[in-house]
Amino acid sequence: MGVIIGGPWQNGERYYRKMKTLGEKLCGNRLLFTGFREDITAIYRELDMAVHPSLSENLGGAAESLSAGVPTIATNVGGFPDIVNDKKTGLLAAPKDPDSIIENVEYLLGHKAEAKQMARKGKVLVKEKLDGGKCADKVYEMYQTLLGSELSYQPRVTIIIPVYNGGAYLKQAIDGALGQTYKNLEIIVVNDGSNDNGHTRETALSYGGQIIYLEKENGGVSSALNTGIARMSGQWFSWLSHDDGYAPGKIENQIRLLNVLLQNRDEIDLDKTVLYGDAEIINSSGKHVCELRAYQGKDNRELILKNIRHNRFNGCSFLLPYACFHKIGLFNETLRTVSDYEYWFRLLFHGYRFYHVGGCDVQNRLHPKQVTHTKAALAEDEMVQFHLWMTDEFFKRRLYQSSDDFMMLRGNMLRRCLHAGAQRAQEYAKALGKKPGFFSGKYHTAVFHLRSLFFKAFYKLFFFINQ
Image (cartoon, rainbow, N blue to C red; front, side, top):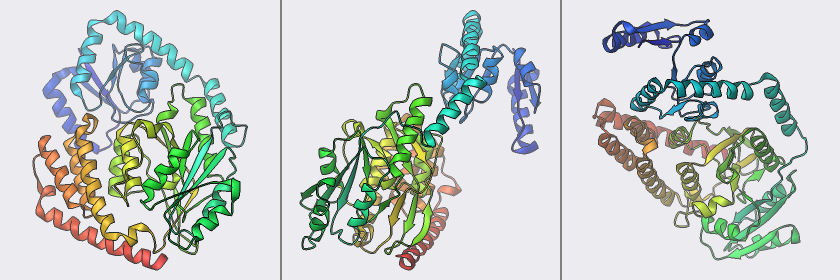
């Protein structure tokens, strides 16, 4: 048996020599490195099987090998499963798992007739899915949906506005909700025990039957959201803080994306679909400060790691399926300052698929009365507890059990002065076989600590200047 490894060496000659030395040691003269080739179709036709061990990919080489009728093995990442249907058009292996790939290679070698049958089915599937005319039609349909054609899916959306002493900004928030271009809406305002001499109540009641108005004793934003959720009749939930705002097309842009997903994905599960987006940061008088661009990731693991380093999730940009509250529970009412952050991570850990909607359709206001400033000590304590919980959740799930991931978590938490979480992440990394090195030593920790203190001071100055 011979093995051909093709492709350019992105890390240069040194990486190529290392791979060649290792290959010759393990395989002798049965290993051939081709480098970059333009006759890839001809090469595929000479192969008994093709293996694509990518860690992230769209359709990539799997589409090429199946088009050539070659039995194909691919890792279960990215777009591979769209065309490599396990045990139907090819075999799927777990990413970062050589034993899984070896097992699949041995299976195809021992079942050559079945391998050829899967390859034939794969060739038909690729031709059907990647037909130029059909792809052009789908792109045209997508643009029609995005650019204003009639929406076939028009679910009811409930916007919940929790408010505490919100007289200064509440009217702007309600006007923004009522001014949405998407009209199948329900708007619920929940007064969380305001003590502003009835100003909040008076503002809300002035809208009459255009909104649903609820009152409760003060219990924090989570309890206010949960009160609204218990009353909502919509299929989708959108949160609007009383001091923030929506662009007129916020909800419509998200519903249009749902329509595109329904048109172009055969097996999308709306009950496990989450939409989120970017935000414009404004000051107390509504002046533009900056834009907060949300992170995007190829999978939930990447989104978690990126947002641990710098939280780019904006709660008011989210659109959640109502079904998620029955599946994974409501907002955590024991948390006063990080309940939103905890909920987004809970969704990620439970495998919800996050889709990013471009454009700053949310205005997030900086002002001195935000709870993260009025309850700064509590916010810091809850942030520590949250990251300990998050690190434990990361360890519970086999998908994330990589010592390198935990060292990355550690570094990301040190950058934010979250030393308890960083220590726990390092302990999990050691449990998974990571040996302590320079980057886990006291010197490295001290450098991160000084760096994070600098950025904390910078952000305080930034807030002071822009509030």
